[in-house]
Image (cartoon, rainbow, N blue to C red; front, side, top):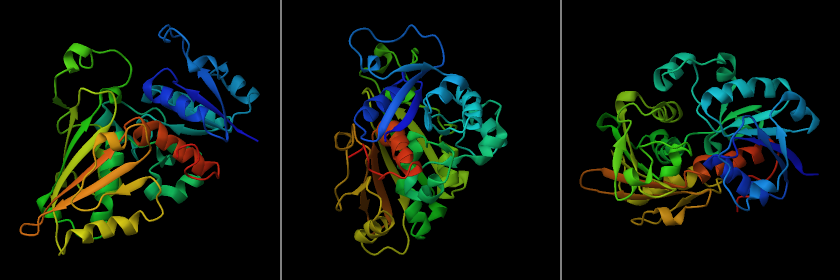
Length: 335
């Protein structure tokens, strides 16, 4: 029998990507949950006319016998909706930042807002499958990771755990993203005339994704410098990560660490030294591609990580988490 699912926020870029992926998922029957009036549906033949729509209410969710709901909504909306959905016995995968941090103090500092559901914040499981697979399987509330931290943590954490990063020299993450990472809501910053033929840095030293990297990779804030940049394209993230190594004699030792860590992780792909990935390799996929360049004379190391911000950085990873929660093959509907 197909699993009965719901999507809230299906009009946004991440929500629309969820719809696209779930349409071809062999185990999914899904519903679109309307949680607000919206006149912004795009005109013309749309896939949204296919899946049934129901109100986003406890009564409708129970009547539809939904087992799991995706929230592709702003954090403040996710906080309110997740509470009653969990009370109704439905599992929740939230694509916002509402439940990614561990305490309200950290949330207040980085999101500049108060958290209305501190008990759920403490309960939520961080949904990066490559490191949290066992916890995800038993969770009822999963915080889907941010797009930038997904690529950064997959690149950094195995090397830190192996003790080959000289932490005294720090780690620099130079990250670039397509415009869809900012969401569908119109703004001057993401308008065509501002973005096209342009390249800009933003949220310097205070990007809200930074604490996810610190928490997941075990870094101190002073050890990690992160700068996000906006690329004039629709989707994709490429991160160039700089650090110095120790106890490394050949570049393949770094690749061997990754190989051991991700031997059972189907969505992490490694490039032979000295090749590195680009965005074309990962767009519209759920892969994270990693490549390494190492300088034996100085220990300087560059890791290039590439993902699709709407795939492994959002909807694809959410479905990967869904598969784990529901006991399905991790790659179902994604390969």
